[in-house]
Amino acid sequence: PSEISKVAAVQLSNNLVFARLANKTYKEDFTVKIGQTISYRLPVQFTASKATGLAVQGVTENYGQITISTPGQVAWEFNDIDLNLTIDQYDERYTTPAAIALAQQMDSDGAALAASVYNAVGTVGTAITFATMQTAKQFLDEFDIPMNNRYFALSPVMEGQVQNDVMKFFTPADVFKDIVGEASIGRLVGADGYMSQNIQYHTSGTAA
Picture 1 (tube, helix red, strand yellow):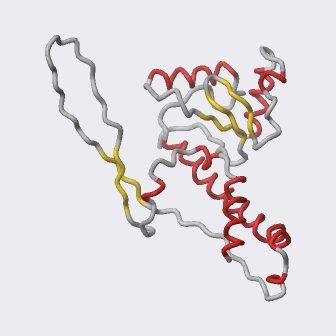
Picture 2: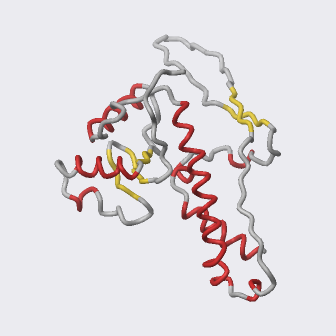
Picture 3: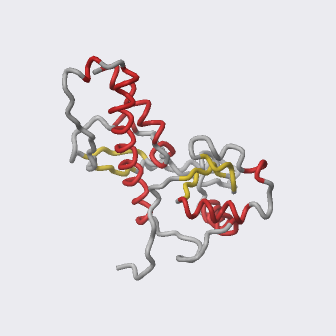
């Protein structure tokens, strides 16, 4: 079981896109049971002062909460004969397909959270362009989002649209040299890009 678990963990990590890029600062706190809630600290915000003397400001610690509410598993039955397989054979037949299924579910759950983000750019139903991505970067900059560790994930159709638009400005070798590795698209608009089949498609309509 320990050998199978090690292989499963590697395969799971390798098949994640959205979830692999997510912030995992608080992962050590996720030791509670399903349904329980953990608190996390929000960054402390200060303001600069032009006072000539000491201008001490109060420090306010703000907290947010995360409820552990989305368990997941992939279970299967196997017989004693399967246990006689080498770990590579068992991995090929069982562990890898199970890890891929679990990774797809995790990525889908993470990508679905995009619906809770109230800022959006572009026009629904039209092709995404390099200009659309530049506008998205502008939004992040204006909201003081840190410049480091920025990523974007595109659906397959969006990936094709962006590639077609970006190739008007760059040669493929300049931008897409890593496109065949780990779903990587390359670095655009100050962020590392990836493709994921689990990015949600949004239907425009009223907020309700």
